[in-house]
Image (cartoon, rainbow, N blue to C red; front, side, top):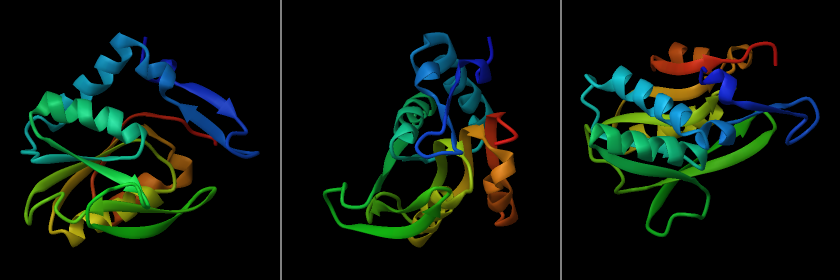
Length: 175
């Protein structure tokens, strides 16, 4: 069993031509879910992470579990209008639309070392927007962790070109 074999592909969702990579099949498998968290924890064990920032919604699941495993705090990054306190936001383009992410203004302190976590990196817009928010708050973004990389869509390369360090556990090519 590998992490990749536990991920379901749903063709033409949410619109024609998109191959949606569904990690709910991975999350429901206790061994697979543990493999994901353990692989990330091992990779980042010596990076002196202060906080994990998880992108709504699947990044919450993975990010919170990883924060627990590493013994650090967790920061939710949400869609517009979902956080109750003062926020800052950033608009970005998706491969199939546009959106906005927000974070509480007190989520991270100046100089805190933050690891960004999400389930998937496609075009990189959501990750770049989140990095911009974290950096506005003074965080040192030490890397971006994803279960899945879709290299043909260029997001991981965009992050790398911007001086960030993307890390993923599996890739799906040809989408």
